[in-house]
Length: 611
Image (tube, rainbow, N blue to C red):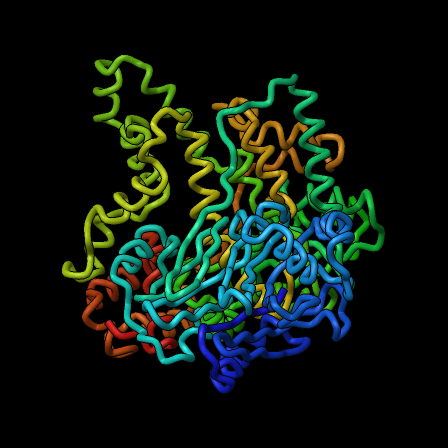
């Protein structure tokens, strides 16, 4: 992993500044390349071929192509064999394989790759800049384009080194407070955008073109028996883990205690001994709280013991919250409202002492139906087959049954994924809140034209393309890279994602179970106690943190009109103060909205945002 930086003119000072502010992503070296129409910068985290010759920016043999690359190409050895007759390789790196692939296949080279990547290639003869982001959107890539000046980077903070406006994007503001993250292609900055997953950009002759190069298939289902399906899935995941073991540096596993990360560990344990595993828990005063918030932490300990790993544990307490909150938000680049970010940051710094690469279980829930919301949506579908004359009277006496009457599409998605409009209108000034904007955005992008698909399949696919990318994976990248730690996600391997799309819905969820086929595939590999545990998700004791005197005082300051003057016009701070007090006194659970505003406030002040 690394940071890549660049722009379409020559300026040594600016490219050095971009490298400097993103050096945490690549602590092993920094280099630049300047040409008549380009400036490239790269900070290196050496993982494959750590020699100086494999550093970046890297040129091809003729010197006509120059690349900066962040990520890993897991099938680079196979591609290297295929390309060996046409290209003379000088390094053992996957970076050079990208250059050789681009020489042979041009823009279509991205269709050959299986990996996590964001890269830019400058063709010195054509005066053409080509950029691409991986299929699933695991590695971030941002850009600014005003028709003349083009700037790109792994992190927004580097683009801001150019003095581009720090203007708040009002549409992104609305999306954030409903979804708790900013969906692509937006960022919270007006004029700065995310390159969407599976997308390439070409800048030539003053024109910027965008192209989607891959979509996960749907509609063609696996036709074999359940046993055959489970066997095939197991082999796909084991092969993925095997591919992702390529590293010249120490490698470990993030072990959360859930099924997904345990599967990754199981696949690794079949191939390696002396494995380092890492878990994070929370330091709390009461025994009851310790058991509630550290259930998966203790489960991970049991799982690590079962596989005989070298297990390492770290705890996050109130002093850590006070110390890391502002730093974590700065590393996010834009607000992502999730208190577990603090635990992710501490875990990354802790794991970096033993490893440079970690494997995690991200993506299992979205691909295989792990979230309770998918099961509840299925229950709503079945409920709505009941005659309306029977459903309506029951809905009038039960709010839960009323929810089951919510139609499929963006309305049901909003029910599970968005914050309540009434709460938002109580804390955000009316002039800045556009009702219906976020629903319309998601409907157009994900639901419109897909009415013929089973909604639960579409729900999972939408989560994979939106929530997973811009909320979960983005946080994972930013928090791990804050410590210069590479995080890999075997369950989101391209081949696994494509195969998961062929698995029928009935093999993923039922009214009474989730992740059916994934559990079946690994039932003989995992300890039996894992299958007896309820689905908890990973959550922090942030609601209790806000009731701690020291953190409450910090929150009170952040949630005040004087914390950052430009945001005074956005929020109803008197109402927010009441909500904070009600939460402190345990009258109303207000964590989500309070944390969302706190994160936004910290971000706005750190980045000197103009409203």
